[in-house]
Image 1 (spheres, helix red, strand yellow):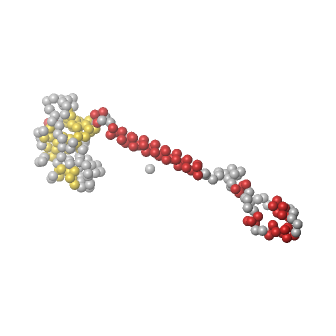
Image 2: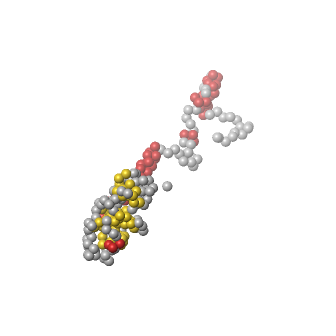
Image 3: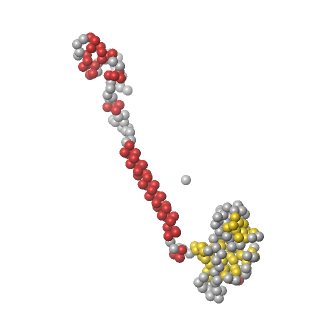
Length: 225
């Protein structure tokens, strides 16, 4: 197509205190022979003391400090955290998907004024700098599409065979269809209408097929496209 372009420890024992035998030693000291009397004293400490004191069995008990966390408590905590994360993920997914469940006709309109018919020459693509849009006028009607590259949003420039992005080299044909480079999507086309005052308007809330021209009747303001 040939087109023109507008330019996130224990207490210490007193020194004179007499050592008292432990209850276990006392029971053995009541035995008969001297050998029996000495036998308990000859046994290793670990063999004679097999049951720890109450304070040693539970270091946290009676000291005011926290005891060990049970396996059941850990599992309960992990389960609650999992439910919270699941609920948050579901809410985010629902919010993201909600916009796709709303019909395009009920979304808020985002109309932008483009100008009068006489502002656009026939068989010419005009770049509207303020709106960052291209307006194409042909005998079959008008078309409006974005001038922002679908790769990272840079404004494209005209080239010998269409448009090229000056940032990363994405290329589009004369109708904005992606043909090479990092861009995978064509330049978006939008619905074009005629306002009550006769001016052309682009509705950025309604994307249409790439290359579609709307045959607006210049003599009927407000005519349906």
